[in-house]
View 1 (cartoon, helix red, strand yellow):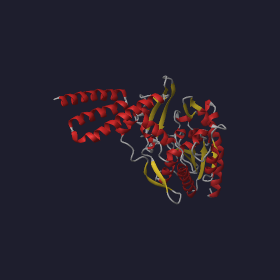
View 2 (tube, rainbow, N blue to C red; view 1 turned 180 degrees about the vertical axis):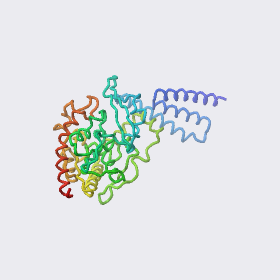
View 3 (spheres, helix red, strand yellow; view 1 turned 135 degrees about the vertical axis):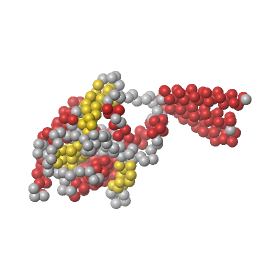
View 4 (cartoon, rainbow, N blue to C red; view 1 turned 120 degrees about the vertical axis):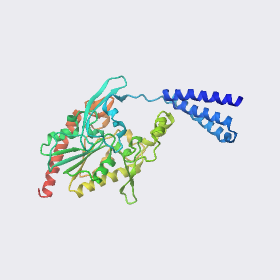
Length: 387
């Protein structure tokens, strides 16, 4: 009778902790809940007491560690968030970031707010039948420029008439422009598109990139789950090998772990630690983009935006050596940083002080630089193929 009373008490305490953990989103509460139920089981079942004591001690130790870490390393304040009422959230765009998946055709609102409730931007994205952002006016021309890249290319936080592909399209009236960029994408997505049956014909393949694309191509970030995964073969080729993070925790486990300070620290170390092997894979991917482009009589041009100097810590690379490596695999590399260092970039070239995505002003200037290069390469190609 006494054992039953103790068991009931522990289970009741566990339910209370469960409610707190659910509504308060406390990982510590979840650990304590699990420990409470294990204690109840230990009282009832003697055969599992040895393993149970070890498990309870481990859970309590982890809970203590979580509390210590929370005290020593305060939670990083969330500076921005998407308006939950916007289509961007309601239609599940955040879940598509980096995954290789694309939205359905339509016009989607996207609104971003600061932690204080200030509006950072309020825009709409026009998505075509193929799941990519529309660049108007849509033209049919032998001179076509394909844009590949991430949120900088699709134009996050910008209206349809403020993106980099739009400004290039407006300045090249004889050309057609296709925006193959998407949030969270990188070199691996560009290569996968070129290796697919999708229509990527054209005169120029342009890839807007930065050193921070390197960990994306290596599937380091949690949000790359579902995107095309490449591995480096012994002969230095990038070979498609399924999807990124196929063995990642389930959605339920991920939702629980995101409230763990210890897990976040481990994740930050895993995602941000520099690895020379990741650079090798990235450059193999980019080299193959160039090879495919040239085999189709297309020019491969890379637009480079420098990373912060601190980004390269732990690797053998710098902004200069990164550029030199790109110059060895592309037909041309164009520095589009708009500053000697990204740290010195004029604030008017960012959407907001809390959002580093390019502003319309930045895209206008970059478009002017690109149009000159595109026009030259377009003329060279027409001569080389006899048009």
